[in-house]
Image (cartoon, rainbow, N blue to C red):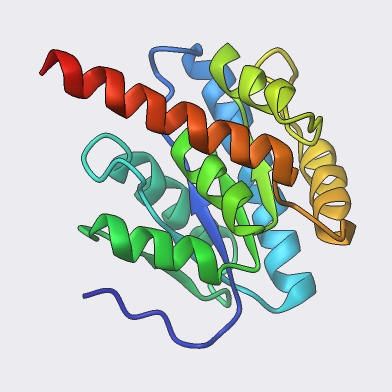
Length: 188
């Protein structure tokens, strides 16, 4: 079972992007993420908790970035959470001061739970989700990722009174999801 103390933490859920970006681009992205996380954690006295949303595909990249952070600043508290159930993952997302993620499921959960989230898109599907909910607070897959952009987005997200989806949009999305499940049920 996963144990996160009542310490305030940033939740980080990165994904293996080797099918989406060149090795050089991935290194640049990771360097920006590492620099931002170190600065943010030190500034706000936060623990860094890495959660591979896809426990198999994402474990290695999250471990790599956690190790890189510790190599650069051993004073930070960094934890990698492995082999957690879906319920435990949702609990970790719901308790985060900030969720920084490249996974759509984690973004959607954050939005439904009103958890401040830095969405780092790697795909048009994430950009489309943000367009559908009328929110432009993400780093698009078309944009270069930088420590400065991460900092600006963190400021905007953390200063916002609401990081949730508009109630009408949330109701529509919930009804659409129920319809999708009903349609799938007819064909199984």
